[in-house]
Length: 234
Image (tube, rainbow, N blue to C red):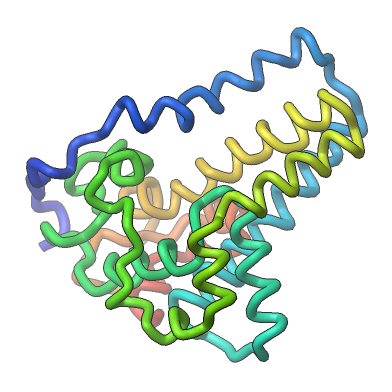
């Protein structure tokens, strides 16, 4: 029943040591006092935010998680690679866990229900060891493609490529603002669908979960804020 608190399992504790790189990246914007802020870097960051949000929304979510449309093998690979540039792990990991979320929404088996705590649903679940591996049993339809398995295993290639590109285009300011700052904003805009979109907004449909619709979240995520609609008709 929506509103019922769900206790986290003992193995759902944040691994603070392994989370150091993730937390450290949130400090990189402070480097602007050294690199400065250029218009080129700001425009680069804005552009990369929206382009990579498209790959998360249209690729990782609508295509790999829900198979909302069909792609040939080459554009499928490009969509997966584009998704990796958002630094949200690989397409199989992302889609597999998202399928679990829909199957067990707001139960003790939901990977990121806000009923386990708001910050848990926003980011805590990513920082624990329990969900670090790809749930292969959930994503066998796409796991059969070796090139997708490759991108899932070496998911750091995309972010590194974008980071290097930002540096080459706009220097250190481009790296800090164009890549790191836009990536941080991209992360938390995406995370709001798991957290805020389950506690803020209106419910058009009486679903068996806490999903809600929010125009603000929909704007930031290219439509994913219509979350209650999505849970009603995936």
